[in-house]
Image (cartoon, rainbow, N blue to C red; front, side):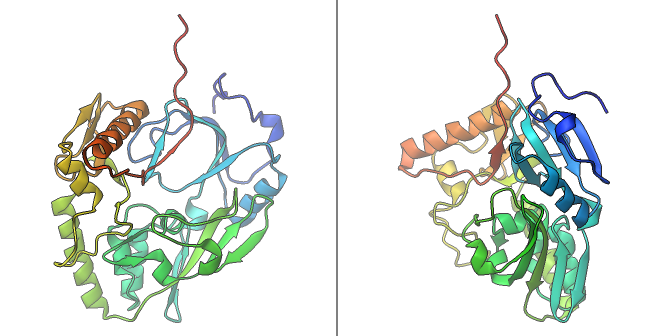
Length: 323
C-alpha cells in the first residue's frame, strides 16, 4: 500500500478505525468502474463482513464522508478523485439463498446471478437478468426493465447506518420511485429480501436467454459503458412489448437531435444505442461528463426536453495545472 496522494489528506490514517477487512489509501477508481475512468479514492474500505462494516462506521469520525459503491456499473468518478472513504462490498456480502418462495441476496450479489438462482428455485425475478450491477445498486436506483422494478419484488432491505446500527427497511420506508429511493444519509445497504411470482425453471431460463439476446442485439454490451446514460423523460422503463411507446424515450430524443454517435475526446454516444455513453479507449471522466452535458443542452435546444442523468457522477474534477 502506498501513501495517500498529497491532494487527498482529509482522512488521515490516525483517524480511521482498525478493521478486519481491507483498507487501502489512494486507491485508483479507474479499474473499479465499468467506464474505466476516475481519480483515486482517498480511502477504499472492503469490509470482511457485516460486523466489520458496522464497527468501522460506528468508530469513524462523523466528519469523514463515506460513499458506498457496488461494482461501478452506473458510475462516473471524476478525474480528481474522491475524498473520504469509499465502501465497496465484496465476498462477505454476495450470498444468495432461495427459501420459502423468497430470495435473500447480499447487496454485492450480481443482479444476473440473483435472477438465475431465483429461476432455479422457480421464482420469477427474470427482469433482473439483463440489469448490470449488483443488488444494492439496483435497490438504491429502483432498477427495472420490461415493466418491472425492484419496488415490485422487494419485501425488505437491511442496511447499516452511519452510526453502525443494523436496520430493516420496508418498501414504504425507501420511497422507491423511477430511478430513485430515499436511504438514510451514509447508510450502506447490505441485504435484500425479494419475492417474485412462481414460474417453471425451464421457462424462466428460456425467457432470460431471449431477453439477453434482444439486449445484446440493441445495446453496446461489448463496449466500456455504464448502461443507460439518461432517464427516460416519460418517467418509466421500456416494457419490451410490441406496443411500447417510444416518443419520450431518452434514446429517441437524442437521436432526433442528431446525436447518435456524437463524440468528444475519447467519449462517444453509441452508434448502436444513442443513450449509451461509451469510453472508446482513452476517455477521461471529464470527456464523458462534458459530452453528456452537451447532449443535454442540444436535446433541450431541439425539443425543450431536459434529460436527467441516470449515471451517478461523483468526486472532484482534476486540478487545473499551475502556470
